[in-house]
Image (cartoon, rainbow, N blue to C red; front, top):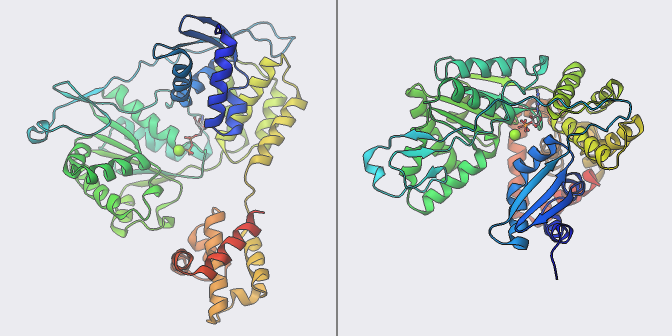
Length: 475
Ligand code: ADP
Ligand code: MG
């Protein structure tokens, strides 16, 4: 059978569909059209430059695997990016795509201490075979300060980040800890600081790494008996950026090794930048000595952007994508998507995809439809009151009894379960959970969470309570 662009793409799609979430598949792959197949090169049409960047950033590995399956090792993918502006029929054709003006970040040279130079270093960021070891910074140049819209919600974090970028290791913001809820720009700012430092100080060694990857590398190093190499490697970095440190909670080995790396870097005037979804006071199962280090520098919170900032963020994205959209539509989106910049972007991307491939205009009706879908998909956040009600009902108590000072075992357990679910299902801090559930302090809540974790593992009946309540609270 002769392969055509469309037969190859159909096969790729069925593979891709099996490997990613349905929503992502719908948003990113359904709108793509296969255009041409010549030899091993498949050309696909994507609705916009932003779309193309997104695919490159998030799905390139998957695309490559899918293509290689169809076309062999030499498979090539070519994007045909649609630039014509037919989103709005009464608008003339205008495309405004600013150049990012950024060069790819080049690997950084580092002279290794002699003794470990002899051995093979098992660090995935090291490109082997070169005398002077090169370290990839793992920075994403698109996440820079120019593309990060300033607003009241992020001013402190942004300016602290800038200050650090101007003088890495030379400010009192060491470590700089940026914390806040999901999708508010923590990862973006963390990269932006690194990117800015590489611009200003090309000789500095900057490394961005997620806590997950860091943990995995550490575990591998222990298995492979290269723990010291691991530590040495990180101690050579000038600017170490670790994303989502809440992930280290409960991982004592990794915390321990990070503690040593941190101390070494700090003592040598190197910069450490961390992000977390919580403030240090609310972090669970992180060693005290590490928490106290986190507090040495500056903790800056990223809050949910206000309405004006949301509008600016949307306009900024549209501008970068070369798309024009009526003002009332931008305002509608900004009014209805409030708590998460990633969702704000998601709506925009869905709209661009829908409008350009169905040759629809950006209408308010289309916008409402898409915004509705996003709002529905967002996990409903339950309140602490609601949790107390459900837990009390389940144990046939009233809420006042649940909150009372009684030490009766079954009531204590109910109270602990309420605290546990409040921690798991809301963004409230330990202190605020404690004060809402019978005026307890944060240590009591922390103890409750640990007790529930332990009992769930050891006590079958208790495990059933947790499962039943989870179902009731999430439907
Ligand atoms: P987090 O790490 O806090 O979950 P991210 O840094 O991944 O959030 O941000 C989610 C998305 O929102 C990213 O695409 C990011 O570029 C974008 N974003 C967040 N804040 C801003 C902002 N102030 N200006 C422009 N884009 C932003
Ligand atoms: Mg992040």
